[in-house]
Length: 231
Image (cartoon, rainbow, N blue to C red; front, side, top):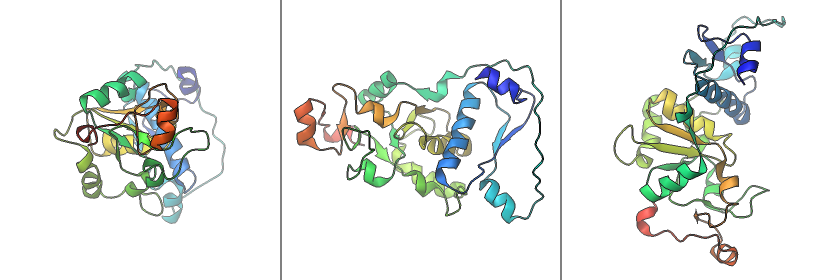
């Protein structure tokens, strides 16, 4: 990753602006995931163009199609591991009631739909649901900060900067939630569970909620959370 960044002319001294080139959620999520990766490499002078290239075009700002050859820069990564959560972190979060936020759409959270490669529908035990789509308008601009704070308030139990873990199916779409919490709302302790629900549900004795209980018991994978653990 360090070599890729250097070849693109990225350095600690440059201001990097990331632009989603298509007006859809997956392109935005990919853009924000790149932002998250650059943050983990220690870059701090980063921005994202709100609304992406679509918004830029709608504003009738100048464009061209000239290819630019980047000049390689010396890039010394300063790894910031506090932006990523691993499976042991999620297990601890369940035990200590640390907020877990499922950024997937409601049907996936409630177990009425599931990923094609998932054995079990539902979500990680104790997780709340804030669908990524609720954070954006129809053209993938972020909602005003006051609305974003209101959306996240029920999931953040007490202190503004308590630890919180966001996740999605594979850690892709969850980058939207991480960006909103960390970079727009200024939450100081946000981690993205990179493995995501797809990996979690495949683990022996994975703790799940909103899943097919009879199927889960058959495979010995269901954890039946009590009321206290379902915040």
